[in-house]
Image 1 (cartoon, rainbow, N blue to C red):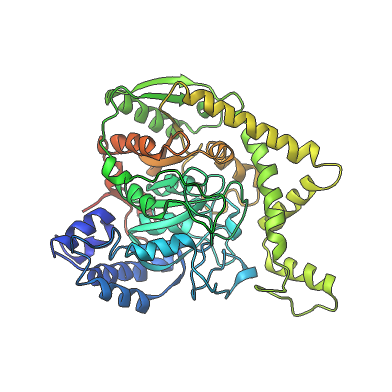
Image 2: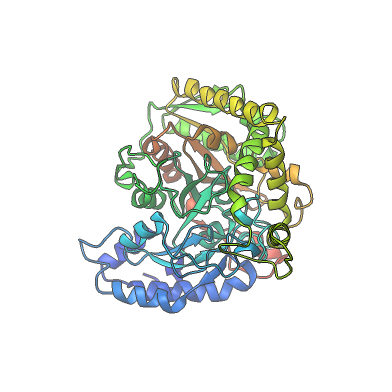
Length: 504
């Protein structure tokens, strides 16, 4: 071990091995992580809340036990949690003025499972307000910056968790993915991001955006870590009626790295007009790597993929308008100080508490559900959703997994798209089809363009995260991209911010 400075850059499985060998301790790791946070947060702003004392106290509890053979799987591992996942006694703001200062009286199911697995939750990470956005610029508490270039966005809405993992401010993180909000920031920040099958992970305690689309999932430095974290949080939960009782296997122990003979479909529609040349080149090279590993890679069509984005921006805002009706200044959250009657209380509270993008989506959703428009918009979007699901079913009748880019571009500059919602929405054009169909996908680093990370998207059959993860793992093990780390953070616009740094 080369010293404490390297500890924040190590994946969780390596930290576990060091604990087992008594070469370091959870206390040493957590102290090193907080030193990294102190050095970089003034420039990155990945966190909205962190608790050094509580984290160090929890680390001390594991110092003598994390290396034992019977230690739980995440004993002593520092984890960041997106701030739309409820944590008892800690703020859960959803990046919104509406919930500024709100502290839930309970833990989300995934938090309970993290704690049971021995994880040390170091803080709550930044996000686009109520998980609505693609850049983490919509947070009421300021944007997060990309560790590879602080002048650029980290993606969204899980930009804070992705940036924290990329920058060594946490070994693992939890995000949520409604239309690409784990995979897109993972691609922009050069880490692994996994959206599980809908129902694989309990949503109890996740503040709802679009209930038929939301899923909690891992962000990690490599596929092995993502598989480990998925195993910890997955499984049936009686508190969430949409969670599945499908078998949860130890994904991390079943990563063979062998994909010879697997049939992988290359999604034709994901390589159409609008894909940046550098991103396309990196993804095509990744596909050739899969061929070299013995997989059969052939083109496949998803005929209705072009309709996924408009369908998503009917379904998701419609569900958001319903879910966010609860924020009225009565039970919890922001309450206007200038209310003369009940109607004024509601309207002023919502006007003051919600940001522009949240208001936009509430209005879109309310319009789509209103009398006279329901069948023309929401019902038609649900029919398109069924067609997209059938497209995937037909593809998986021929292929074991599908491949394509995660995003049409690499990370764009802060402020570049914030005033153009349609261009911002196009950032999710390759990710939203999976949410509409309820199937799993993972982003794995596959190269760089102009010094910025690019992600390969591996798409799996429903509840077949194992095959999907093994494809991603095989590619990862054949390439160096998962070992590369961004340079130390410094103020936005610094010329050295695009360099590439291998892990020491």
